[in-house]
Length: 304
Image (cartoon, rainbow, N blue to C red; front, side, top):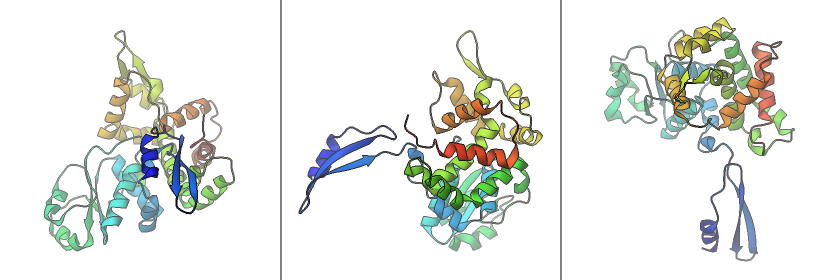
């Protein structure tokens, strides 16, 4: 009771900040407990470990590509917890974007007809529903690991290779970063995986803020064509042609157009650092991606 009372009376900490709570433990006397709120709380309930345990790196990247292009994806597993963990984990990979369509981590068997819907969705089904699923007229839906044949060509080739290499080397990168002066939160699977996919978006759309212009009324407008044409890489331009038509991208840009002040999140911090690096165009592809990722890991939860 004294601990709960002390906790209730403490101010709610800002991201990355710590509060001290006094408590009394029988036999140990008074004790001060420090509670730290994570800098990036969106990952608090995300379990990337389960995702990597169930799927290969290549499968995860294929699913990521399918979701970016707002396709229909069905996860099939034996356990409810696996379905829930993996579904939430792949949605977290889309940050700073949000999945705008039907999202049902565990779809009840009585609602299985939803998979016949022609609109994008991400749903999870228990293995016991698989026979019924196979009877339904489901077209072009990636069920479990059985997915369409073009997933390997959806993402820019060099960035896809960089994603794969960084994720295959995740344990090595985590251990490497644990030797640095960064906070403990950087040295986790969640921290690394988050940074890897953020780096993908930084490399593809990190220059978006340069194409948000303001008119005489003070309204912001996004210069779509100028934004896309400003990209030197043909494969990234081709990817953007498709991705810019998605509701995810439209929602992201609309949010930035309507904001009265600039967005302040982890993605914006990485974009700022990326724009400072832009003049340095000597490196490209996998090495640039990995080097950029390595530099950013040190900043993940650094205190200002």
